[in-house]
Image 1 (cartoon, rainbow, N blue to C red):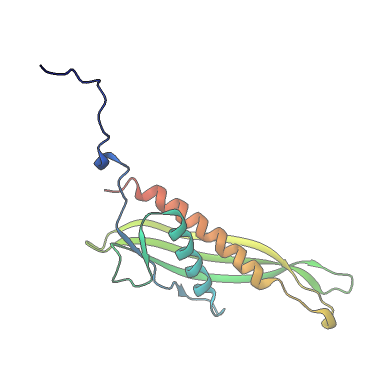
Image 2: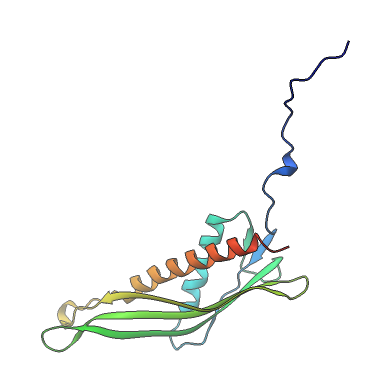
Amino acid sequence: WTSAGCGYRLADRSRTQPKVTTALAIPVLKNTTTTPRIEQILTRALIERFSENSSMDISSDDKQGDLVLEGVVTSLNSSPILFGQEGFANTFLLSIQASVKIIRKSDGKVIIDMPNFLFRDQYQINPDVRHFFSEQNPAMARIARDFASTVVALCLENLQTID
């Protein structure tokens, strides 16, 4: 006696969504600006965002990854955009420009190249010396989050199409 099956079977686990890569190395970005630590702020944001949004193993050691993300912070500018009653600037526009590429270590091929990211945010200062407070550092943190979110989204989207 043979039993007729119901037509259902267990799902094949190998048919699940394939991982794009095993590991991504994100060493500290290069900084060609005169502003210290901006490369560390942006690198930290990238590592956090990739860790949160991908299944890849993330490392800061470029010897650890199948892929290596290389980036350069090419400019950081702060320009006054609003002036107070006494003619002192109180609102500034912070602009950060950077380039990012992902290189496959096995053959050195650049598989993603994003040469010109520009991110901006406003911050204010109180021109009164007795109550001076600058919002530049929080503005840098906001830009770093936006930068990392954009880079991660573009990279993950493009990595899915690469063999």
